[in-house]
Image 1 (cartoon, rainbow, N blue to C red):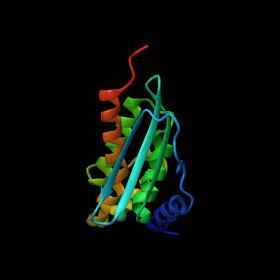
Image 2 (image 1 turned 120 degrees about the horizontal axis):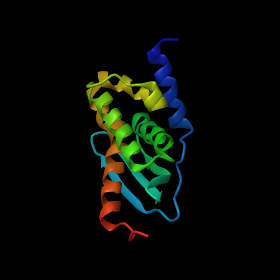
Image 3 (image 1 turned 45 degrees about the vertical axis):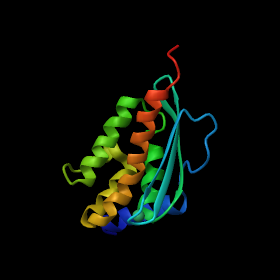
Image 4 (image 1 turned 135 degrees about the horizontal axis):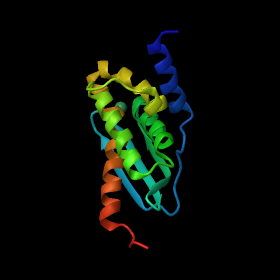
Length: 148
Ligand code: ZN
């Protein structure tokens, strides 16, 4: 099986059995965005607890790339603090922009998204969940709860 086929398998697996695709009670941040080029929709909800992304969930519909990226993102970021989450998000964006080779140690299943670099129109699909997360966390900071 070629690397490309393995990546396709990973993406299809997350598409068919999405992780953390549910509603979140007690979300501290959330955002919804669409990718009109493809008809993708993603909502991300986060429950932040003591600076850690204790729960990261998504809901939405669209192509396999957009939905599997969201599923993999929730797995990669759950339990991470903001700095680690930002670092993973940067690494994913660098990978999608072909600025850096992905590190499986850092990105896990997310390296499967490196296959979309050859299909520029799909890069927006892969980036959608990350754009939603960025905005959710930015808003979350602005309106976040008071410090303890
Ligand atoms: Zn798409």
